[in-house]
Image (tube, rainbow, N blue to C red; front, top):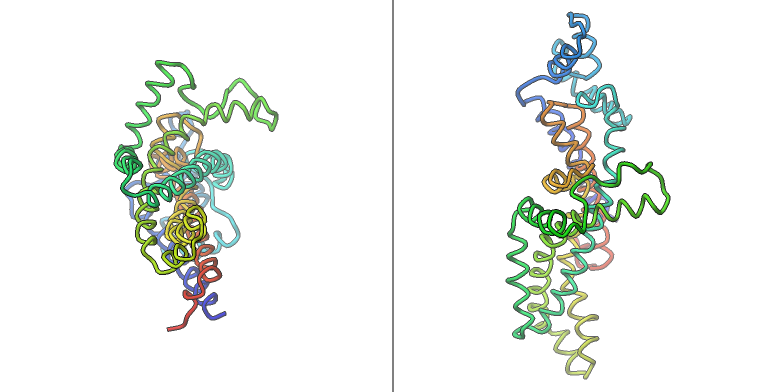
Length: 329
């Protein structure tokens, strides 16, 4: 029990530290979101006077007349209530609404792509590690090179080949904009069709890391005593590989996969920009360009909670899978 309480306490402290950094870092950046919003208002012919400016400062939580400590306390209280404020870049929408409109697209695209790359990479890595010294080892440098290729370059190559040249997939957007958003099969099919090429980009660039890590762990695990004992008992090679070697070799990859799942909500900004995909990455870039404190803080908070939550789940599962991790020092 002490193990789980200690882990939970650690992640609560980490969450508080992340919230604190999330509050101060945007305020250390040059510029002011109120100035950005007022400039947009002036471009549309609106009038700007001190009363209007004061109203926007109070609305956006950037009141320069209020002490920073009071702003911080108010910020923590708002976070506890789930009130993330008003977005400047999508004014007058709430930050919660903006995130809720973009997050499902990113989770659907990056989440599925990350899961596929993990499964493919781990499965190939287990086979390559078990068959080390054979022609299968040639997969390691090939996939490693692909993993080293920048996202944007690979995305542009795939767009040029499969969209512009072969015309197999659309160039941009997450679905056919002529279709109404609904849960009917026509719309779902359009989403899958538009998301195939961005997902392929993520899978190709990510699978090499999983393969290499799993292959190296398999090579190390094959020399362990329990594997040698299983062979001495005359067990089938396939059973030894899956039940003994791969089962233990995959543990570090599971931890890495949990971290990757946490970062799924941050999206792949470059990939989303190349394909004009309506994900959270584009909203984050939009927030930075417009000094949108509230939206930046909201997105960073979602990312932080996702990463910490994924790591907490893995730590707790590790305590169940491997009792050695619960041993008190």
